[in-house]
Image 1: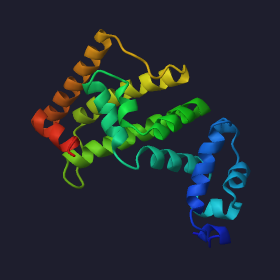
Image 2: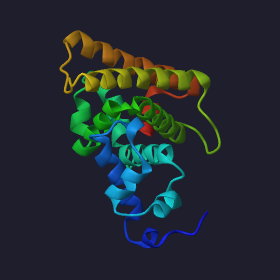
Image 3: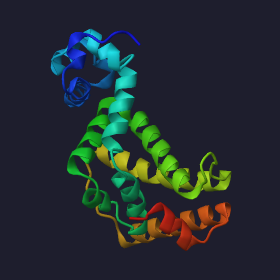
Image 4: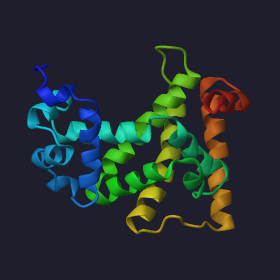
Length: 206
């Protein structure tokens, strides 16, 4: 790694760059963003930027991952939306800034990045809870989890792009979401050789 520029040693240089990314994303499509604009908004130089991030794609991926998964609130909320049959549970469980930045990223053209990051982190969370170190979820469990997450994310992304969140659901839609949650837990439990109670306790322990 190259020697950091002077301002890379200043407190919060990396955080300032990440914050500048989010600030610019509110008014600039991701495809139009430049390193020059980021370092100007962050109050640092290009050397500092490249000390922490090799390019804008790496910055975007890092900013999204750190913003959405500094804790497991979003992982819990996605499944909670299914269990409760209520997409609005996301707003009750997830910090407002996180939801706002998710919407910003999706509208600025980073829907795919948001989708891939959330899928990966949800998968990692379930795997760490249900598998011994070094082991992986069974293919059937992985499919069930990814299918569940994909449906929720698709709904959130479409509603976000239309500016339709929060989006009240009909009783029929709520019942359907709850049935998907039950089917997911059942499929994962069967694949992993566990009881449904054990899966829920491991993944959603306090």
